[in-house]
Image 1 (tube, one colour):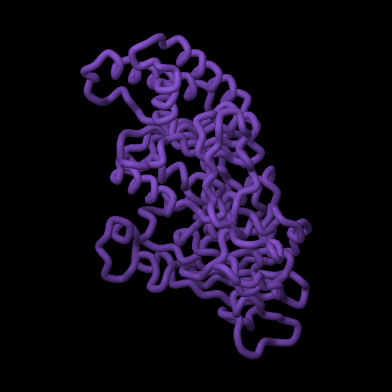
Image 2 (tube, rainbow, N blue to C red; image 1 turned 180 degrees about the vertical axis):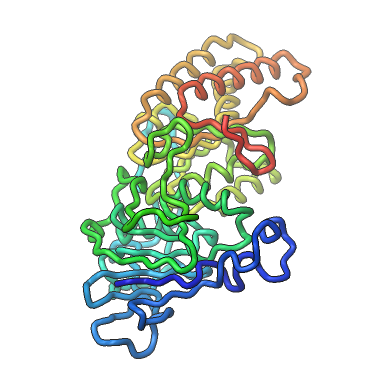
Length: 410
C-alpha cells in the first residue's frame, strides 16, 4: 500500500496558530500541517465505514490491511497501544498484582517483566500478526511503542514514523534526538510511504531483542529525521551499551534516563534507594518515579548491582548510583570505620560495568559542584562517589550532564 502523509503535526499544526511558546515561535507558519493520510489515493483515516474491495480494517479503524497483505497501524494521541485488536499478553495470563521485586544480595534480577491489564479485560485477536508500517504519536506516551514491540507487532522490519508532532517538544532538533533514541523517524509533510510485509512480526519480542536497526523503505528525504543515527563515539545504528547520566538534585536526570529506554520491549528498572517507609516525603518521591514508569517494565529493588548487571538479559535502568553507594557505606559500616570494603565494592561494580552483557542506562549524582560537606564522613562519601562516577564514565560509550532537564554530552 502507498500511504500519503498530507500532514504530520498535531491537531492545529506546528507551529500552533497564535501560540507564542518558544517551540512555535522558532518555526515558520505552516511548518507542519495537521495530521492526515490517504492510502492508495482512496482510503482515508480513520479506516471506518465502507472500504474498497480488498481492504480490511481492524483495531476500531486504527489499522488497515491492504490487498497485498501488508498492514499499517495509526495511533494518534490519547489512544492506547494494546487493545481492540492489538494483543499484549498471552491468552489467559492474569494481570500481575505487584510488579516490584525486592531482591536479596546475590539473587539474579528476573528479566521477564510485567504488563498490566484491567482485571477481566480480554485479549482481542482480530488484528494482524505484525505491522509493516506504524504511524504513532511518540510525544504522547512513547512507551506505547515499547508495548507494541513487546507484543511482537513491531520488529526490525517495521517502519516506525512519528506523527502528531507539535510544541510538546521544544524543537525539531530535540525531536530528532528523541527519535534516534527510540528507533523511529519523522518525515516531511507530503511524504509517500510504502508498506511492507514484516517477515518476523508473527512472534513476540524476547528480552534479548532490542529496537536498533529499525528499517526504512526508502532513502532519507530532505528534512527527515532518521532512526538510530549514531551518537558521538557510537557506531551508526547501534545504541550505546553503557550510558551514564549525571546531574544535581531535581535536574531531570531520572526522567532523561527513562526517556532513553521508553520504547524498549523489555526493561528492568533497578531501584537502589529505600522504599520510603517512615518518611512521607521520600515515599512521595518513590511513588512519583513509579507512576511515570511504563507499566510493562519490571522493577527490582536491590543494592546488588554486580549480580543485576552480570545476569541481565534485557536493558537495565539503574537509579541511582548515589543511593547505592550510601547503602554500601551502611552495609560496610564505613561512615566512621574502614572504607577499604567500599573501594572493593566499587572495583567489583566497575568490572561488571565493563563487561555488561546488555544495555545499561545509569543515573548518578554530580557531586563536584556543591558545598563542601561539613563532616569527614560526608567528604568521604562525596569523594567516593566522584571517583566512581569518573571510573564509570571512562568505561562508557555515552556520558551526559543533565542540567535543568537538558542533557549536555560530555
